Image 1 (cartoon, rainbow, N blue to C red):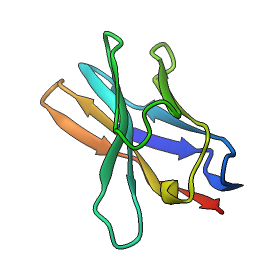
Image 2: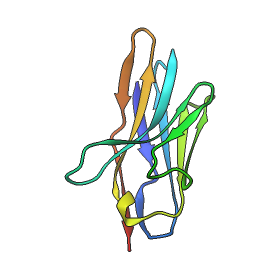
Image 3: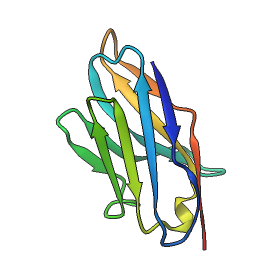
Length: 117
């Protein structure tokens, strides 16, 4: 299984970006797909996730500004980021959890998002 993230970049505060993550390979037993981020000197933190239901969840820091969606037919997840703030600056990582053949977590390569004030 491979995850390919795209869509990062630089934007001014108040702007928007859209991240995409495409999963390829043997995608069986889908559980959850989402985005995490890691700022310099900080731990990786959850941003948003989407399940098969589909049910979405967001961290308090992004709720109301970010929206996660999934195209199940294409195994692609999108993260629409609006009203970006300088504190959103981080490397964003795509994450996929599969339950078949065993519970396994996969990570994408990360994409940089930089928000300037």
